[in-house]
Image 1 (tube, rainbow, N blue to C red):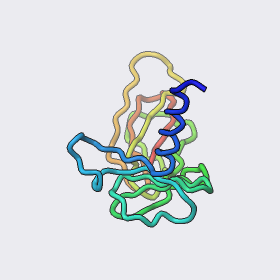
Image 2 (tube, helix red, strand yellow):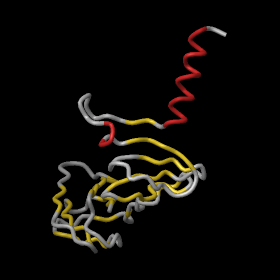
Image 3 (tube, rainbow, N blue to C red):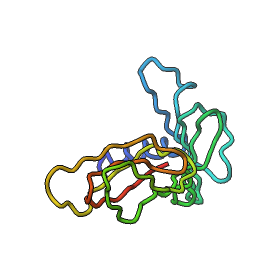
Length: 149
């Protein structure tokens, strides 16, 4: 066995056994730096915000706002809301409201041309609400709306 393999194996075991601390800067104290740890059951350590805990059941848990919360449950995102995607719309040159069903004002809205007829294609977004996306699109142009919570 080459010497570097033994060194690698020793370092790997040390990192896996103890955990990993991510220091944002060289002068940052270890106690205030986010960490990456793993185990069974709920994370119970009072780690700094930004820390990650990997459960043996596949859960990915993160610490933010002073509390642990499951970010992915057994590999499936739990805090990510599926985006809204509209049926094909046709612009009429005036403001159109498209109901999105997200329950909150979208943090990101994409207006995607789906069948351009040629010439100028103008999209103007209005003030979106917790129920509707407000958009003005050139008359006759087809588009889709994708909105993320």
